[in-house]
Figure: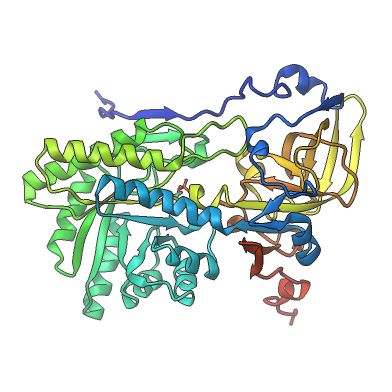
Length: 477
Ligand SMILES: Cc1ncc(COP(=O)(O)O)c(C=O)c1O
């Protein structure tokens, strides 16, 4: 009789549930969306903490957001550079306080461009890339290649050759096909490279189905349970051109609980203990991936991202001690927690539609082309009126994008003061997986990206032009 294999999979749930903290997020408010609010102060903690200047305007990196709009137009993606530096420092401090070797490897899929890589390098962090394009951007940025990790479940021959030619820090091997390709490339080029094995520890963490990558039934990595990972280890150890640096897992994204990370880290050390006993393998690095949750709306109540790291390091130290293994370096790969909170999308309000008795739509000059997360994942965000983020609330509206899709809604329910065409809305915490997933849908040009720090701003990605949009087009012959 067929028997289900014994899979001990732990599922950790984050907090996707509405909080009772906000009076407008109850079902009555949902039914009465067009109801006019008496003048209520803004309730969100996130909004309370936003810096405003003397004119009450939202300030980003010491610059008035309305001045940024005047200078660079909308839609505009703005990063507070100090927030990025600070988050990297917070991670580094926890490692230093715990006295362990480490690498903070920014998961560049969250937001990659030349300036971002240069900024990350200024802070002595590593990066991980998942494509030839991200690697090429890092090369153009002058990023130290020995601080680059290469991920992906279908790296092409060209991408693997590029990684070997540039002697990147480590290729994180994902499957047997890749091991075979790399073996051939190393032989042909008479080269060596560091590798790690990505494994699925059977622990997943959820906010949304599409965010699951750590569980057994995953397209990523070698399964521990069935012995795939051990088989991969044997293949790598047998190839003297591959230097087996260590083991990697990534259990999911936008995670709010430390438990899953502690269990995954312990599982990785148990695996290393087993490999040590069986074949004498000693790992130099344990990489626990990213996934540390951030606050998008006041419904999210995350702990500081660095607190995850503290728990992970302590769990690893404990297990390593119990198994009398040498302490490996601990690597993390935060993407969202570094880029997310630092980002703001600025939009200009355009048209408005009031559907009597149902709701009001306020449309802005961007949408799913610059941030597809709400349409793709039902991701929630919060927006404020840039000219006065703490102005009393007048109404709850649906913030719609300008793209020709009914699903192009940026925020389903947003409390706002009265708005009029020309006002600027600032969507908060948009720095991760926003511009990175931007498209030219409807042949809209992608927005400019601006870095702001110490009262100074600079364009780091130019706004696309209509000419850019047709630059790859070829006329019909
Ligand atoms: C292997 C790996 N590392 C790191 C990350 C970054 O995750 P996050 O942005 O949630 O920190 C991801 C995200 O998908 C990933 O797949």
